[in-house]
Image (tube, rainbow, N blue to C red; front, side, top):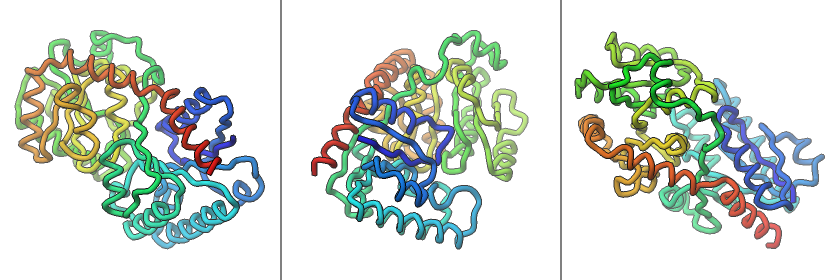
Length: 350
C-alpha cells in the first residue's frame, strides 16, 4: 500500500519519523513524501491510494504572501483534494494546529478547516483535548482517531553531560537553568517568561532562550525585555540538531509558556532528554504533565508563571525528569506507526 505524506515543514522531523515508523511496523506500507501537491502528483502517480496531510495552512499560505495569492492557492488545493476523493483515494489529516498562530489569513484558515473536517476520510489528533476542539468548533465526531505524538529519542545526539554542556554554553555550574528551546514566536509567551524570571530575581538562576526569530521587531522586543541582565541569554538563531543536546542537557527543566497550543512536540523533545516541563494549564499540557509527575502547570497569568518558576526550585525535578523520559520511551514510533497502518488498512477495506 502506497501512502503519500504531504508536508512543507522541513525543520521538524515529525513526518519523516512517522513514515519510517509506519514502514517498520508494516512491510506492506510504502510511504512517499512530497512538500506540495501538484497536478502530476494527483494525475500521473496512480500507485498511492492514501494522502496523509500535515499542516494544511502551509500548503496555501507558505511564507510572506498576499491574502489574494493565499486564497488562490487554497482554491487550487481544495480542487485537487476533491479530485483525489472522486478518484477513490482517501485523505487522512493530522491536526497539528487548529489556527495559524499569528492569526494570518484567519478567514482562509477557517474555510480550509471547514473543508477538511467535513471531507477528510480520517482525522488524526494527538490528544483528547484536540479531539474535543475538532468536535466543538467544527462538529466532526466521525472517524477521529487519537494517536499520540512520538518521541525524539535517538533523533538527535545525546552524548554530552550536564557539566560539559554548561562549560560549552558558558553557564554557571551551580545555577538552576530554565530553558525555552525552539523557534521564537509571539504565541509562545516568551515575553511573559522573561518578565516572570525577572520578577523572581533569583541570582543563582539562569534563563536560556534559544531558537530562530523571523520577526525583527519581536527579536528587538525580547532583547529589550532581557536588557543587560547577566543571567538571561537570548540566542536568536536556528539551533541545528547536533547542538540540541547542549541546551537540553545544560538545563534543569524546560519552560513552555504558550498562549495557545493544540499539541506539543516541544514537550516530547524535552521528555526525550529526560527533562520535565513548566507549561500552562491549557490544551495538551495537563495530559502531558500528569498529576505533577512530569512537570508543573500554571494558570496563564504572569504571576502564576513566576510562582511556577519558583516552585520548580524545590520540586523533585530528578524524579519528574525520569518520569518524563519513561513517558517518552512509551511513545515509540514503530508502535505509533502500527496504529496508523491499521487505519490505512481500514480505509482500503472500506
